[in-house]
Every structure is written in C-alpha cells, then in structure tokens.
Image (cartoon, rainbow, N blue to C red; front, top):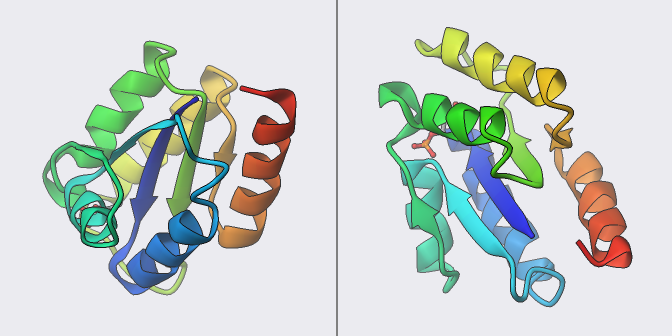
Length: 123
Ligand SMILES: O=C(CO)COP(=O)(O)O
C-alpha cells in the first residue's frame, strides 16, 4: 500500500498518534508525506519519504503522485479553522483525488475507516 499523509499544524500530533495507533496495519506500507508532517512522523519512529513542506509545494508534489496513480490513499488531516496561503494547492490535491478516484480522508474518523477497509482488502 502506498499512502500519503499530510497534516496541518494543529493536526500534526493527531496524525502521528493515528499512525502509531495503526502501526500494525501500516506494516509494509510505503508512507510519504509533506515535509513537516514527515519530520513529525519520523520523530515518532516511522519511516517516511518526505516531500517539500506544504506551503512551498509539498501538496502539489503529492498531487502529482495522485495524478500519476502512484498512491492508493491520501490521509490529509486538515485544520478547518485555519487559513493557508497555499489553499489553491490544497484544493488542487483534493480535486485530483476526485479526478483520479483516489481515496481521500480529511479527518481521523474517515482515515480510520479507509485504512481498515484497505487493510481488510489486503491492499
Ligand atoms: O501545509 C500542509 C498541507 O497543506 C502540510 O505541510 P507540512 O507537512 O510541510 O506542514
């Protein structure tokens, strides 16, 4: 399973907690992340391929992977209360998930359901 994880600043701790809670299900998965999210995950002991930080192109890089069908799932813990200078990149990433029918979860509850489903399917 190839998975991208992204979290806005207010959600990074929650993302790392989510990944650690699901460590067993993520065994064998290739995880990539936007830069700062990836650094947080690494500090949690996870192996992650890091792209640029979101505001300087990381979301766009993940979007490219989506467009190239190189990801099975995108977990993006968004902060719905925050403002982001790179909002167009965020919208592009989510739009391309829809264009290419790549599963996208934007909160922990959805992410858990997605991960459980993919795990059961053996993806
Ligand atoms: O900005 C982000 C998502 O839009 C996340 O980027 P970082 O993981 O680099 O903070």
